[in-house]
Amino acid sequence: MMHFTDFDSAAFLRDNWQQQPLLIRNPWARWHNPLSPDELAGLACEEGIEARLIRQAGSKWAMEEGHFSEKRFSKLGKQPWTLLVQAVDHHVPEVAALIEPFRFIPNWRIDDVMVSYASDGGGVGPHFDQYDVFLVQGLGRRRWQIGPLCDAQTPLLPHDDLRLLADFEPTSEWLLEPGDILYVPPRFAHNGVAVGDDCMTYSIGFRAPSRRELLSNWCDAALDRLDDDDRFADPGLARQANPGEIMPQALEELRAMIAARLDDAEAFARWFGAFTTTPKYPETDWQLEAPVARADLVEAVAAGRTLRRNPASRYAFIRSGDGALVLFVDGEPIHCDPAAAALAERLCASACFVLDSTLIAPASSIALLEILFNQGNLAFDAD
Image 1 (tube, rainbow, N blue to C red):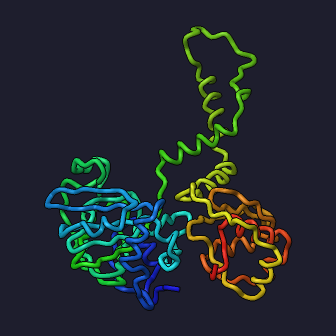
Image 2: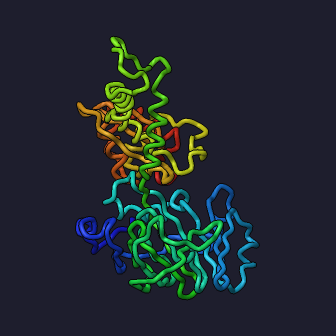
């Protein structure tokens, strides 16, 4: 398992997280590039993998969406180009392992690991993102420039596919070697250019739901819980001087009708747990073809076999009182009694682990393990 030897996460959260960029010179105990360029290109050729190819010719930029044929890469020529492949951690355990040192950030904030490969001079142009990102240099070298904060009024170049800054004035610049990390908070302008061929960068991205997104989805969920009989009523209505006036009392009662359903803390928690663990690619079915036998699970755990969460699955939990909790896995709530709660917490704590047999001794615990195995959310490491 890859981990850091010299990194103060508490100081980082205090001084940099969502505040200032930070260059972190190779903090890994032992850095090794987890994916070869050929393997990345192979993923970009697979159907169902989200991939993009960005080419630059002078001041002109072009983008193509995958999947790609193998022949496409042999026809790129000498102009700078970049291949971007999304959610590589879902398919390559060694890339998923890169996330582990960053779990001082809550799981629900983690998005995925995008991997890029660039030829000499390749990049995606100066831009800004709405999320936090750790840019880990995997292979080769890349020059990163950081600019000022941007917002919705920041001028962009006219382009159908890319959101490139019209004016980019760097304020800082660094050359990253393998193992180096650059943290970039939301809305900071940045630009990375490959220095030499075989430049690979791993972008560990974090999600930040917008207020619009939260309101839209929460309101939709609230509407689903209502029926048409739940209506405004005003018994004892008093005659008013002007029938055209909407009286303050009526407005307050109408507002309270809405607020009572939207300002429901317990319902919001249940909704958000499901909302935030919805898979990035929900159309992918990881369910096992043949269900696993409960006895085989018990035997394997007793033998000390290593368990690994499906890297494409999202796990989180919310405590519900009296020692119980609700475990959310890929958007689905699983109510765990106090006996199964310890197992649920262990499943959420790390992506790869060995279970103590006592954790699955209660019937509700082994039932939880069985559900997750059969849904494809969990497997033994060798599988």
